[in-house]
Length: 538
Ligand code: NA7
Image (tube, rainbow, N blue to C red; front, side, top):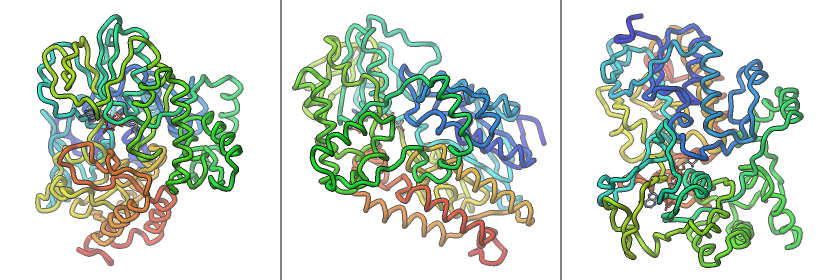
């Protein structure tokens, strides 16, 4: 192995987030020489960059964290059912130090290119002032890691403070007494809004599309619950391993119209009180599939919003009219709608009064200029493919991944692409549709197993057969159509980024199918994955 400036390793991992840390652990445990490069100065990925007030899990902390180590689970006491960013960042630092992984990580290193060299069967990876050779390249770069800024005229001319939720500074932002704009009401916007509403002079929310926000129902984990979690860990891990979504919530199994209207109302009240994604998973099983069933639940949520928000005109603005519940990724909130009862908080409905420009002093709409001290851009991410397309990856014959994916990603199980040997992107597009770490953990396990298999059997090159890539990609694209509740105007399809190919970027079949296909590949000894050997299409 060479110096940091010229590393020569078995495995190079890009990204020190949830997925990358686990992949690094697996690689190190299996005895490979491994290096990780990370653009930031610390670990945590999403939980490093998104440090805005209110940033928080909306998966239960103990189902989101790692499950691979009994000792880790026993040692780490989550403070809340849904841990906030500071606790999450502490957790990932704890994991990295507990397993002595930090010495493998090179921080402040943003990869600019990665080229496959067929003659040596290695990747040449470059960053500013850095180059490395690696037999295997794992891009654990995340699906929500490239912040998206809307192309509004004058956006850069604003002379006040401007922040994107996904690029939040480490030094706390002082909101006290300031005139603040928040643009965007996705999961990030609805978390930040209630956190700052009480301290700002004024808060103006620029909303293009309202979302179906329901209560997160977060609370501290009591000592009794903590003891119970520790005592029942093996059973919990088993349940999560089998759960289709990667959550502990138990599906009700009931259908909407089998209940009377009174029973339905009582059931919805119960669902409203569940934590986080319980709103979907424990709901009637036809809620996401049957528009009439969805309309019943949506009406229940709309009534709740009307009951919380005192001004009926404001409530109307906050209730989605363009998409059914689940058509966009539903956010889970704490005191979000309540914030609009404060006299200093208002909402601008951009469908009625579009933004025309950002000026040096504020935001201009058809109704005039409003001046601000701070603008918070909660405008989302280039989801799924954003980070991978920016890595500068070039596979066989110099083929750029970005070009190969110009019409949307082509993947095998959201992990690999044909023409890109020895390259893996667990946690990538087409992979997840639920509690992300559970999916990306499965994908990392598959990646680690495949590399181990190649080592054991003397294969230098792993490349997914084109037929398998075609099969998975076609499945994703065709099955997405059957998910009628998913709205195509959403980052699920990449439509939030102008010019991006409209393709479904999640895994529409869920985790069981992913696991089934992985198992089949393992059982077949990864037939066809090793060019030159039997069954390969090269
Ligand atoms: P999201 O969910 O993509 O939300 C972005 C928000 O920004 C959403 O309300 C958008 O409205 C809005 N947006 C985007 N572009 C514009 C323009 N040009 N003008 C006004 N408003 C705009 O990102 P988040 O960061 O909130 O959440 C991402 C994930 O993080 C989330 O799914 C969780 O997994 C955690 P739109 O709805 O597109 O009309």
